[in-house]
Image 1 (cartoon, helix red, strand yellow):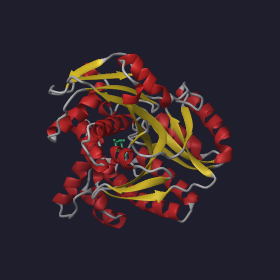
Image 2: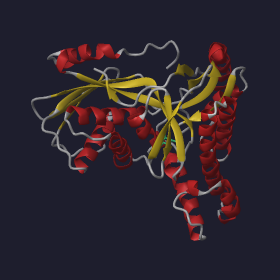
Image 3: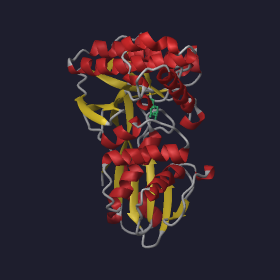
Length: 397
Ligand code: GLA
């Protein structure tokens, strides 16, 4: 993924589909499912916090057509191998099924909820979202597939339910205890806006993403990681432990992000373990940064937004400890560049991507300078692209 990488053009997908499966192009439907950036509010979706993500104009495409029999067939333009199943299968995770697990995960959750399909279908996919890159390739896959199946078979599953299906599939099938943020923004995002989502209630509100002369540049460490091999679940359980300690000491909260920073300072001594205390501190202050960031954006104070991005990165580095040399190099080098108001890691961390808010006329020298420094430190190149917002999952053809 770089500025020069060729993106797959979705117009080519129906022809590729017919070449693979036969029949007519007219019977093939194509759905687009976006990547996301999280502007701010990291690792707090599973702590009852508020998050501020945006869906962006990098898409995964799912082409689908019903079959006359009960077979299910998956293919991907770029990944080798054909995966075959049947609508009557009991879908279970199997390592050798690779990406097909994400799709079977959705089918298993649909079954669980009592949906049944009258016939099989065939799928051809292609993604312009880098796999394991931190901008939610897996949620794009889950929600894109769930939406395609729901629409094709008239299951009428609403967008919030699509997001929940994706999350349930991660929990029950893939073994990742993720929050709801990624699936939610991918299912409900709107072009030209970011979305302020309250993860405790699932209330959400769109905020116009008016960045004037600035835009977000996405920077990929190119260090691939999988949430399941990362320390993601460990961080989540550390937060749960901190919460329990507070509750056992009479602090009346259901989630860490219910605490204001003032209240936290009063009660933090209960969490005597230094590591747990740092994790909880990040959650409380990150939640406040989200509220301030939304305010800053509403009043057009982009410098303040930038400052909050930098503070968020520092907290994720020092207190939540989910960054690492690659993300720190990208964010900290970015923060020093002319025309850059702020930068932070985005997503789960441990590799993946960072974002920077950069003035339009400085994007080129910005990328050149950050790339130079990154290559020196990491020994390989980072990927860069300046992004626009995009719509949540939709039918494109
Ligand atoms: C991953 C998870 C999200 C969220 C982020 C960190 O992207 O899927 O639910 O927890 O990490 O903010």
